[in-house]
Image 1 (cartoon, helix red, strand yellow):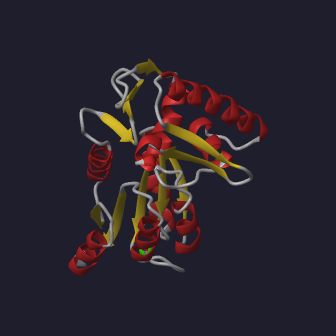
Image 2: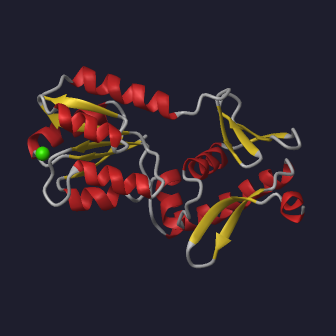
Length: 232
Ligand code: CA
């Protein structure tokens, strides 16, 4: 699971980072609001921890910009003791939870687990978009219109999961390579093309009208076009 930590107190940031890595989170660390903001806006993360008071750009503004881009990644804000106003402002602005500094490691980890659980849509455990649903328990793809189901490979599942989590957004080949393979190089770019074509075949197999559209030179987008509805 990829996690972004934006915290300008370097010793605290490094200590938290160390703990998270021990817990098998893959952590990227930023020490200021500007680099933190552009990392947050990449849409590559599964969870984000943002300090409120940051040089360059504060945590509230980062949350606002991230949400205005349609990125729904769970965000935990770190606030200083007793800043009640901050907490309210943070949660109103689209953050999911807050933690007051100083905090216990165990509490941070518990909050992150809770955020992660809440972020997974609970409608029968399925992630849905257009006429498709992903079933996590069986790693399968179901077309809600035709009722047909097909098993997905691990990469195919993660590709569709990533698209559904970022619906309405265009994802670049680079983003897919980093998100699914964890790397960003020419070999992974070829993998992206290959696995996108596998995934398209699975969508066609269940006769879904949801497709992965390639936008030349830009990236890919998950689209649902119900032709019968457009014509009537
Ligand atoms: Ca700070």
